[in-house]
Image (cartoon, rainbow over the protein chains, first blue to last red):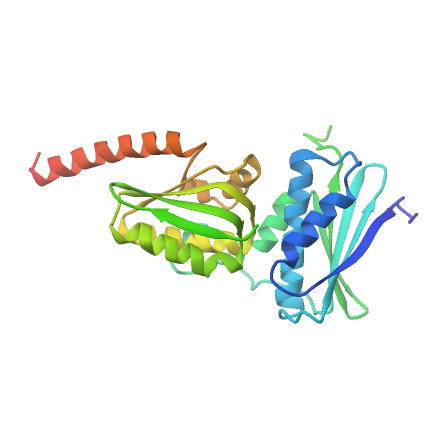
Length: 150
Length: 130
């Protein structure tokens, strides 16, 4: 158990190829069965995980299936945490390029670029770190939604 | 589930039925179904997501591409059969501002055809100089 009381439920890898985003998210959902994270909040975390894995596969590993994406699933007394790491240098979208549907429909932005928005909107917290040649995205979801600080 | 897409065409409303995963692998099938649905210049295209079990950001990008094209052609784009989770995602991405979302095909069909009837009436009136 870690300093913040985190304990590991599972650690696994998926190859960097199409479809791994979905399979990783499903496996995370299975790992979290029996925890208080259920229903829509679990679905939101799974969507965040799928987008983190998709970024790792495409940006971190350029779709090279021999490079595995690592996933660590942990829980503590109040939350679940999923860490997704790859061997890339991280992904920073260009400044001023927050996805804007109006700009996309006008052809001023590419139709893609929703992943970071979805991660931020779906998970309660998203943290990134680059260390020892690995880029890691941490998604944290509290077991219960906090409404107006309650 | 493997992705499949097929289009029912004819009349003012074309329906695209999807099943499986809507992700990057869906591009060829979805675009082919959309091309078939839009070929007859319907007033609206309804995408039925009721048998879709996964949509990722690449799938959303495909929907943006279809929306861009349908807007250019003056074809209304609508969706039905989305789970609440994916309705939330459509709201986060603001797709709901451009894509009408209905619970199911029947209610979408009734609303879209009613609206299309009104639009046709207006267009006829404008052509007649009313």
